[in-house]
Length: 292
Image 1 (cartoon, rainbow, N blue to C red):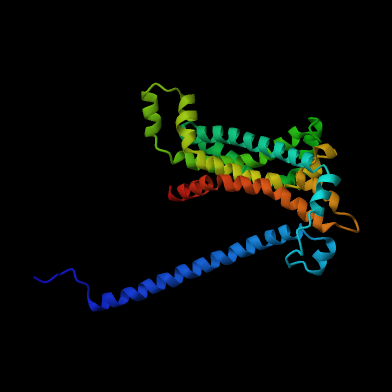
Image 2: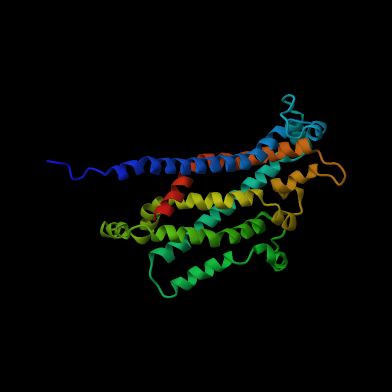
C-alpha cells in the first residue's frame, strides 16, 4: 500500500527556500534589535566613561576610554553639593507619587472594570481625557492654584502634581488588564463567603501585579528624571530634587562636565536598579497584555 500522505517533489523542494526566507527575516530582525540596543546604550556608556575624566580629557578625547580611574569627580559631588539630600528628596517624591498613583488608579480602574453601573464608560473617558492635554500647558493656572493652597515650595504640592499626571494612563492600563480577568474568580470567592474588599485585595489585585509593575515603572522614570516642575514649584535648596540640584555644576561661563556626568551616573543608578529588579514582572505584564 502506498502512502497517500507523502509530499510531492515540488512541495519538498519549496521547504528549504521557506526556511531560508524565515532565517533571513529573523536575522534581519535580530540585526535591527542589536543596532537599536547599541544606539540606546552608547550614550549611557559615554556618560559613565566621562565621569572618570577631567574637563580637559573630555574635550580632547570625548569618545575615548578614560586614561585611568579618576575618582576626583566623585569626591567633588559628595563634598561640594548636597547630593544625598537631593537624592533623598527625589526618593521621597517619586515613592510617594507612585504609591498615590497606584492606590487611586487601582481603585478607580477596579470599579470601572469589575462593576456594571450607569455611565461607567463616561467615567473612563473622564480619566482618559487627562491624557489628551499635557499638564505643562496649564502651568500658569496650576501655579496660581498651588499658591492659593499654600502648596508652593512643598513636597505635597509637587507630589500632587505628579499624581495628577500619572492617574489617567494608570487607569487606562489597569482597566484593560482587570477587564481581562475571568469573572469566575469573583463568583467562586463570593460562594466561599468573601466580601468585596477581600475579593479585590486578596483575589483580583495579586493577579494584576504585572500591570501594577508597568504602571509603577512607567511613572517612576519620568518623575525621577523630571526637571520642569521642580524648577517652577521648588525654590528652597533643601527641597530640590536630583535633576534640579545637579545644575549647580552648570555655570554661566564654565561647566564642570566631568563632575556633572558623575552626578548623572549616580542619579541614574537607582532607577536602573529598580527596572532590573522588576524587569521580569514588567515583561510578563507586557506579554500578558498582548495575549489578552
